[in-house]
Image 1 (cartoon, rainbow, N blue to C red):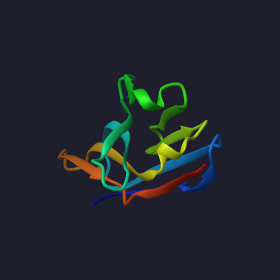
Image 2: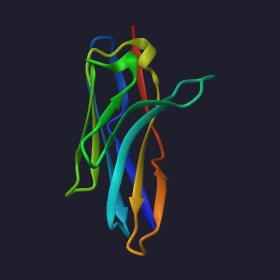
Image 3: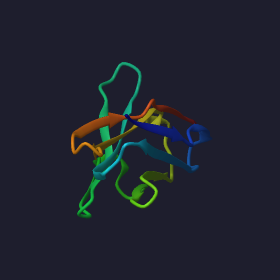
Image 4: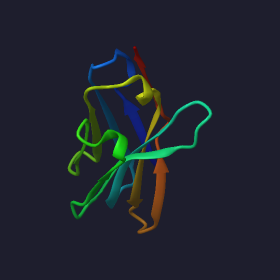
Length: 120
């Protein structure tokens, strides 16, 4: 069993910053991908930022230059540093990982989601 636990969401004024964290626990052999997605009311879930163990990263155009994804493989944790936040960044943010468990099965795991609200 593998689970992701997120933290760090909240309410912030436009222009402010937040840092999201997501820690994986359980039967983990390795993690090949860590990413953050978000879903605003009435919209589809979209990629915010993602990165592979090999070091390649991808950002949504709307967050480039403002958000930074980073990972701590030793702690099985992924972070999302969000700066210069805008009201349109308001959404539920979900972390996602591709994890190989100790039985060598590859799992796609989602966190429970954390609300980020940016006021104007």
